[in-house]
Amino acid sequence: MDKIRLGRTGMMVSRLGFGGIPIQRVSHDEAVAVVQKCLDLGINFLDTANGYTTSEERIGDAIKGRREQAIIATKSGARDRERMEGHLKLSLERLGVECIDLYQLHGVSDFQTLEKVLAPGGPMAVLEDARKNGVIRHIGITSHQIDVSREAVKSGRFETVMFPFNFITAEPEEQLLPLCREHDVGFIAMKPLAGGALDNVTIAFKYLFQFAEVLSIPGIEKPHEIEEIVRVLHGPLDMSEAEQREMQKMKDELGTRFCRRCDYCQPCPEEIPISLMMFVDTAVRRMPSDRLFTGFVADAVEKAAGCDECGQCEERCPYELPVREILAEQVRLFREAKQRYEEQASPG
Ligand code: SF4
Ligand code: SF4
Image (cartoon, rainbow, N blue to C red):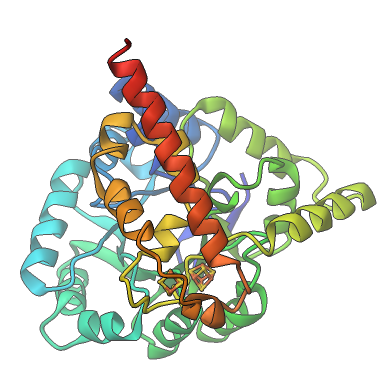
């Protein structure tokens, strides 16, 4: 598989990487098998996170005896020094490696948090010391907020930035990629299928593969999923006219309903986690019921049910999403799913 240079890390990575969220959902053996399948296909970039429950450990098992074939990236959402030290140690143990190729500050999506993680003696300092000592090789950042990502790139302290990128969330094309080129920062595209909203794999990846320096990391659960994407990469990459029309159609349909998770709509006076609520339908489809109906999604739905329809979020959303309408739909959908679950759990 073609390799690209990941910014000034200098690491040569396959254009297609592996996103390690979905392997939490399958059995241990299935997870190991799918990671190994990716390595067999020439995919050398494996991304995971300290917060993805079993993902690091499963990737660690998959690369046993094949360490030199893999570039390992993980991340931590720690916002203070002690927690970052703990997460780094845990990542090394779970992955079973002595050195992690890329360690990223996870989900830094507002300026206050960026300042906090970069403060002297904070999480960034832990990573910089670890890089000096050879425990990690490179440092990156992940975010859903384009202005914060731009600031991180300009700070000169990060070698990579990971941001959602697909033909619906296409803002990076003009607002982030040129800056990454200028600062020689590697760009990693998360959510290439818009978190499951795009089901036309060919069009989604033909769009991304136009950008020669972009590393895409689709979340992969089953071997056939990665095989399908690799087929796109090996075929003609130009979009036919019919495909371009189809892409435009999907943009028109989804563009005004699809949340970019940028959180520009915040603060909500009712403290409703709006961007989380926008993906309740995905959570209903994908999360195990016991976690769905008792955990953080259920809490968010309860809060969203208290939306007083003030409309402030809609005034702030740059994509003009009908937030109130979508929230109401998500609350209804969640409650219906919960009712079905409870009826199945106690029939009669
Ligand atoms: S309309 Fe609802 S979700 Fe939006 S800001 Fe007001 S209370 Fe929050
Ligand atoms: S509703 Fe709009 S502003 Fe809020 S996170 Fe989604 S896209 Fe961003």
